Image 1 (cartoon, rainbow, N blue to C red):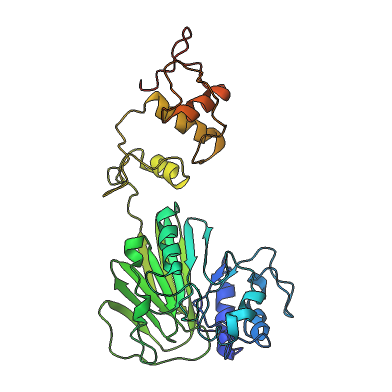
Image 2 (cartoon, rainbow, N blue to C red):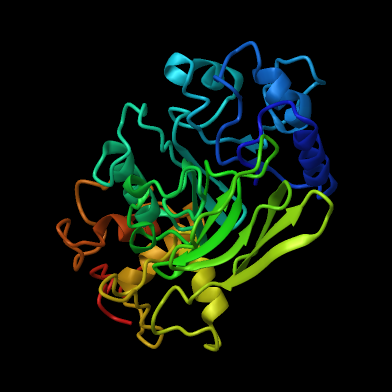
Length: 365
């Protein structure tokens, strides 16, 4: 994770060399990728010169690029100086509308937000963009959700400080961590129970700090550097490492259990959570606390859903069109599990519970 870097400076080269030494799977940025004004004339020198091996498709002058895109920048205010941020959008091939987007890599779903006031879909907590983020976080089945953008909602930096309009309810919406830049410092704060990082020491310049905000835990502006993030299904590790290789900050957070009634010590916890992350189960209760009811026994109808998803993947609806008449005399077409039971029959997984008349016994266990 780099931020406020795109200036073709010796410091940017040092940070890029540091990052390359980690052999990372991919790179995120917290914006200001192309100083001073987001121009098409400077973007390859400012970005591709140092990070072309992560970019695909790459059409610049510094090597052949990557086979698969592994560079996911967010927009900063300097990228927006050129109208429409057009050079940014032309240079990178990013998901969605390219201004804000999401993607999943390993156990993490990432959400890049555009925090600049020029964003057509707005930057307020009730904007179209924020609505997209809230819905995406709610729908995510990844073990972790990380949000990143440019303008820091919380910053003790003396130059820009906090962009209070970006204080969206990230934690309440489901984010596990938030990254930003804009102030050319490194800072870690704890707000609403989750870490907020300001990461703006990618190579352009270094700013001073003002008075520390409430929740500020680590503040650093001695030298340039980058963040290294490691993720497993059960933990995230965040490090800020200066360009000389010294570790400035090192934080590990552990994931809370998905279901309130399935603690990590439960014998089936790993299996149940694997089913959830794969989209096969949602549990027996969503609110106010997500529950699984691990000791309840599935009905035959509920088992039909489970088996069909095992056969066809984490599908939201039965895999085959529902027939006009029921195969089983005790399963009406209006029954909630009709389509799933018919699909189970079509796939040859059931003959029912009785042959004549043919019954399924959907509510039996």
